[in-house]
Image 1 (cartoon, helix red, strand yellow):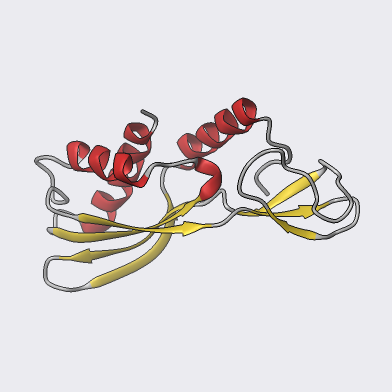
Image 2 (image 1 turned 180 degrees about the vertical axis):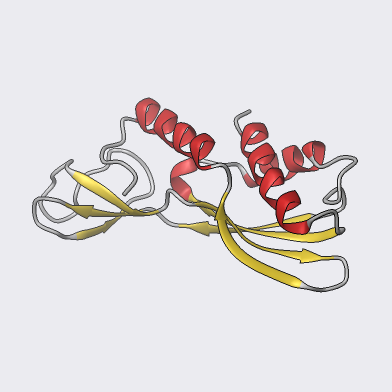
Length: 144
């Protein structure tokens, strides 16, 4: 369950921002290329956050659809699953424009304060996770 590792990275960001203040909600942007199962991520975050300032925080997940740009014809293509080929010319030479995000967009403290940051949840972990999915699924292109 790769969501446990992602939950740990998210929790690190949340606790750093909250600075020991109780957290009510965590707002995330999660790209579809991460193949995250929202329920698994929520469960993993709940486990990871036990005995922390985020122990009672709820995750609010916004899904970011995968968008690719063809390097051959410059066409923008929306793709949900492999094979990842340009919808116009059929080329597999694509770059990722969106859908590889994993961002802590904002946190809500128990007192109602919203803190907006849009911070990647452990960029090294996220990059490794995305590369793992690309290798397994045969995805082309790479993070911008």
